[in-house]
Length: 230
Image (cartoon, rainbow, N blue to C red; front, side, top):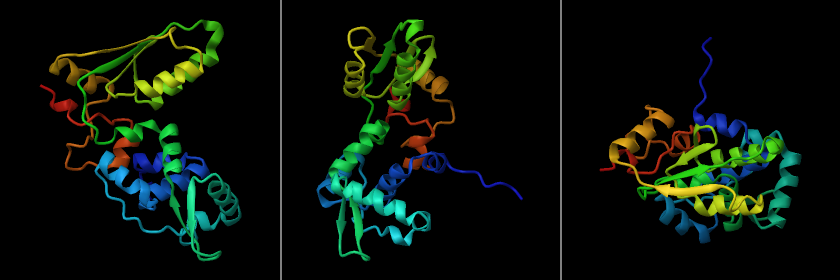
């Protein structure tokens, strides 16, 4: 029997922690509080349905009922999730604080559908061999922010992630020790860069088969308009 191939998002979801599975389930179904519905529409062009989400109807979560209850109680206490209704018939929605939490862990979510500003970001660093853990944390963060490794200690990205990167570098006491700059390339050079490091089989928002979640987590996401740069 032929093994069913998982989509990029299915692979991504499978490897999430249980807590993050809850957040993405709420976000994916449009179960969000009204105060962030307009924000999601304005930022991503997606109008949430605002329908409620009952975890008891989902077999994955039903099998983990006790753990689910404890986790949801924690999220409600921290105001990451809003509960409605009475015990036994409660529904749940993602709060703005919960959405911000997702963004902090998965910043590439902010890039979906965003037009390209025409700049490439380049990060160059030289971290001593004695600080391997610090170097490893930096690499993980760069990947999370959508950067691609192009050669030893050099990473590039077309995403406007400066604010996130600056926060990370300051937290790790690397601010001022890492070279970060922006530059423009010709249209041909930009397309060549995208083709080489984001691969040629790119699924982007201009494709008729565009799927936001698969695009986002297949590691081929590019800003809208980059491939049509002139």
